Image (cartoon, rainbow, N blue to C red; front, side, top):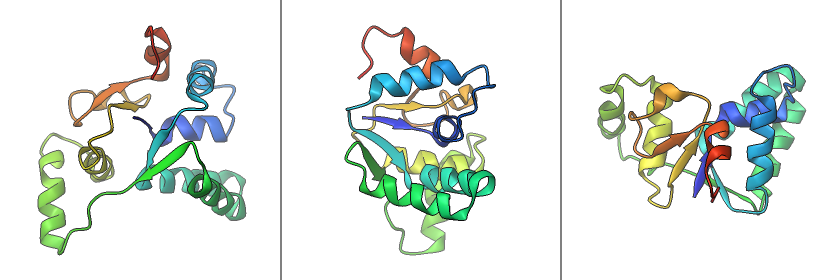
Length: 147
C-alpha cells in the first residue's frame, strides 16, 4: 500500500497551483485514484490543521469526516502503548535517527502496518530514516508502474 504524506495532501487540498510541484503532485494523485491508499492518523490531523487554518475549521472537520468515510483511503494508526514510558521507548529509535517527534510518530505508524510499501512525500530528507521506501510524486510518475 502507498501511504500519502500530509505535505502531498495539503498541496492538493489547498490547490496551491503556484507551487512548482503542483502539476506532478496532481498527476501522481490522479494516477492513484481508484486504488486503496493509506493516510496515517497523524498525517490526516496535520492536513485538517492546515485546511482549518486557511479555509476554516468547518471545512477542516468536513475534510476529516470525508477521509473517514472514503473507500479509497485507509486511516492507519499506531499500536496503543500501555504507558508513556512505552510510548517514549517506541519513538526513541526514530528520534535517534534525527527525526522530529512528529516524523517519529509518522514512522511509528508506518512501521506498525506491514502492508505499507511506500511513503509518498516531497520531504526527501526522510529517505533512509523511516522504515519504508520514500518517493516524491515526481519520482513516482517516473516509475513504470505506480501501484
